[in-house]
Image 1 (spheres, rainbow, N blue to C red):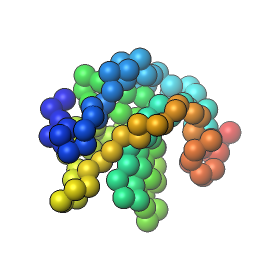
Image 2 (tube, helix red, strand yellow):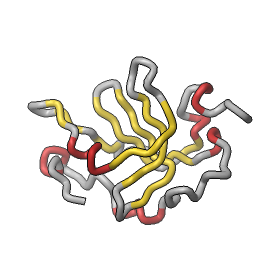
Image 3 (cartoon, helix red, strand yellow):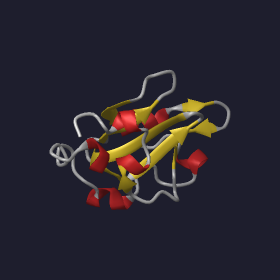
Image 4 (cartoon, helix red, strand yellow):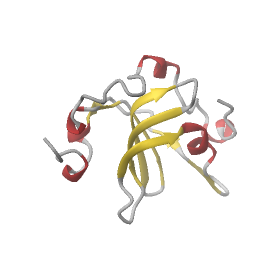
Amino acid sequence: MIEIQRERRGYDFVPTEATEWAKLYSTENVKAGEKLLVAHYFIGGMDWYVAEIDVEASLAFGYAMLRQGGDEWGYFSLDELEKIAVHPIAVVERDLYWTPKPAREVLPPEAWDWGE
């Protein structure tokens, strides 16, 4: 991944420990509320939570909260996320103090209580 916002952000967008996170498709049989959210990215009032990752492809699966009813589980490109910038200073940040936790502890019930 080529990080174009690295200098502005001051740290790696995808940490080295991401290679130890759940791989893409590896939690398909885990109920939504029990999926472990291993990373949190944000800018303004928008948030992306990572449950699975393919580091080489810079692709993640998780939950996006994009305001105005656009919240959903899905896949998102970490390359594209890293490039987002609201000039002159705001870029998508990784929550450096995030600790992994089940989705039911973070997300609203409508994100995880279907089918459970």
